[in-house]
Amino acid sequence: MISPVLVLLVSFLCHCVTAGRTCPKPKELPFSTVVPLKLSYEPGEQISYSCNLGYVSRGGMRKFTCPLTGMWPINTLKCQPRVCPFAGILEHGSVRYTAFEYPNSVNFTCNKGFYLNGTASVKCMEDGRWSHPLPNCSPVTCPPPSIPNFATLKLPKSSAENSSFYQDTVVLDCLPHYAMFGNDTIRCTEHGNWTELPECREVKCPFPTRPDNGFVNHPANHVLYYKDKATYGCHETYVLDGPEEVECEKFGTWSASPTCKASCKIPVKKAVVLYKGEKVNIQDKFKNGMLHGEIISFFCKDKERKCSYTEDAQCLNGNIEVPKCFKEHSSWAFWKTDASDKQPC
Image (cartoon, rainbow, N blue to C red; front, side, top):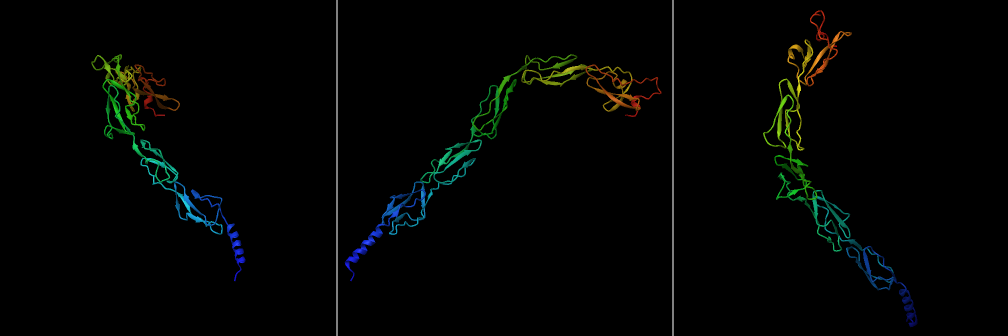
């Protein structure tokens, strides 16, 4: 039979051993909270782990009891962030993000010609929902453009319901007698407005001056306006220097001022010259003179090399200068060879 004294002694010793094995402060897990949280726990005390707002548990235990050994069991609980719905596609725009989970944000931008319909940034909240509805990109539209005074407007084919989209263009025309100052084509910008409108101004030109030795015809009106035309001509033996038709331009001046240039009398009685690549007798081809602007080539002798070369002469408003190297061939010196008949150098 066991002595009562021995039983009391053993019980006392066991009580002392078990009483000294307390559990330490439990290990901290990311994004979680321990209740109750103390520096030490007596055997049999219970703790409970819970994930913070915005996080959910994945595997592992949540409740633990301090054992007699004083060592907490291994905790495999993981608190992971809540995931919000996919938001990685924005038609006609772009999305910037790192992850679709709490507490990250997603940023949205639209391509040029589109505007953001909604908020530019949304945040993944604790409950796994976005802080705002996801936006979309809507096309930029321009209202019907204003029509400048004295102008007409041609709408683009792509225009729908009196609205135009980004990069759409329209062309403006001024009424007769009015000139356009500015670009005749306006464009719908990314800001929903039109580029600068041009201005239509009435333009008048003075009556064109009749050239010496010529004439000018123009509309028989009291006033000549923008785009009106006049035609020029010259008397016989004179050549028009400039365009035959001129136009009243936007700054109130004519596009050109043609003049009539006189023909030339060639101070040579007899010679063979080159005219438009052919040899001609000057006394036959140009017996009535040479028109302004025309060019002939005189033959000259190179006595040392016993060959010939050519130099040009041009009629300029009644004046022509015969090359100094040219020597008119005398019919009396029949034994001499004319420069035009010599071998070219």
